[in-house]
Image 1 (spheres, helix red, strand yellow):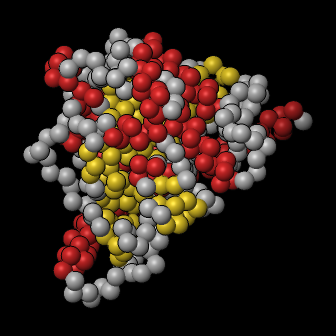
Image 2 (tube, helix red, strand yellow):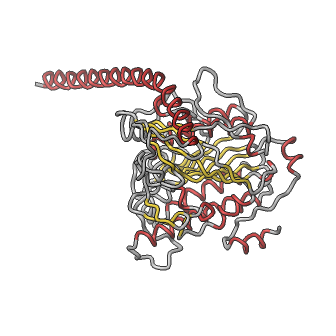
Image 3 (cartoon, one colour):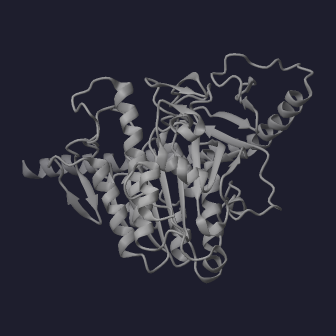
Length: 462
């Protein structure tokens, strides 16, 4: 299919999916490039190919139709916990301490791929510690980031961005998502002749729900209309990235993954398969909190039009990328995910994990909230179990004493997962509590010393 034909079919410029070299040749001759796109506050109901409305996402729909769509992917219900999880391949009970921070001793997927010969870049939303040395510390060769040091405005008239150590002061009328996605396009272009990994944690579609440059009414105050436009602009940006890959002749052997970081904001009510579906960001007591879309497209992998309900959580991303890149997993690090790379190659012998697990602490390291999930049932750590397909709002808990065979078997299997996690989680809770207490004590001691020095200095002046 020619580029112009694809542009016409999806209605978005620069979104071609033309295939070049044969899949077999591409697999044998080079490592695949990897582009991981993670939309902000973008729940499962936001893709039209997943049954969401009123959204139109032709580019992502086409990527799914010509690749793979995973219908049962769980993130954390909140952004920083998800970022820590997806980047490290580890459950939050191992490494999450507070909002806006990734522990400096963690190993990320950028470390893993860089060690395997990839050039690594990140652009978009950071929110993992306010120090411009951190992207490099966590394995990224290049970056252009919002909320690395100062938060500021994220959309129209974007505030401060930091690009490879250089402060871009903002306040120049630029649209934030256009600036950071422009860095993605530039990164891909400059590194087209070597294997690259580009991680793009998007600024869109987080609140405030405001018009985009493509909105018909730049003064619109209707949050649902604005959110619909923000979803459309998200899809447009993905189209630009895919289009650039095609223009450069590297589309065939580039793996493009698109996922949400958590559920949509609670102010937004959409339709999912024709039924109202309220956003559940921050919540573990409805499907809409952790349930996110996952689309993967890799022409050289040879899989087209596959839809899977494998239980996937975001710990699975790091081992998947490592396997695709032929990279060894980090030594001395406990990883919790399972690679789903065989799905991307159409390996019929692959056996997906029959469950996924989420441990969520909220804004800080408080009491853990947990769930385990299979292909139909969702068991909370508090004991309630729901059929998430028929009851996504979790209004009708299934009787614990049910004799229905499938539900009974699922409860036993999922409870066994929670029981198996408990000792390890409790051990990690104690370890991190001790670490945080020590850190707080050292901080207080440092403050005391500085205060004492200040008093002695004043006394000396007298």
